[in-house]
Length: 198
Image 1 (cartoon, rainbow, N blue to C red):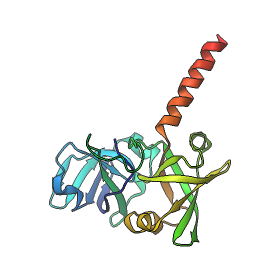
Image 2 (image 1 turned 180 degrees about the horizontal axis):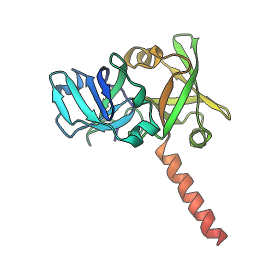
Image 3 (image 1 turned 60 degrees about the horizontal axis):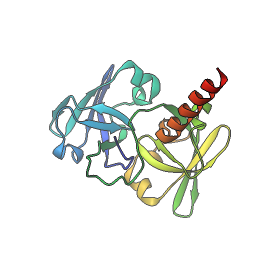
Image 4 (image 1 turned 90 degrees about the horizontal axis):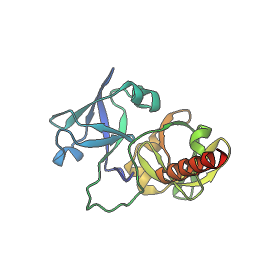
């Protein structure tokens, strides 16, 4: 489990078929083999540590559901280690299971903040509510607006400075994970409706 609070922006060193190596000196200080690290919101297992880099394997399903297949050496990625039972939950409950991708539509300055609008699939938008949580490339954010095809979030200065999101551009794909609680409620209500219909 993760919180969506980014600990470090790492750098892709190697990206190949089923493999990914990231430079991340900060989070590797107390990381060991087998630990989980969310890379742009995707929960991956540390398979090798060499100096200030770690290596993870990727499955075909990861490529289908996320933007990790588009990564190239030099790209910056958001990184977060998995939670410990004693950690504060500063963001929201994030599983590190990317459900799909969205496309950045625009960046709009608003005072010190930046409003980011993202076009998303309808099957994910149905689990999003204004003032509810969403995870974008591993970043825990609050939805401030939503319509039938897109949603918007506001990036405070800290998020602008400590994640890779403002370095992206319109047209870039981002990983999305919706609120697990909304998914559970929807599944329970659907099951109840099916039982009532029988």
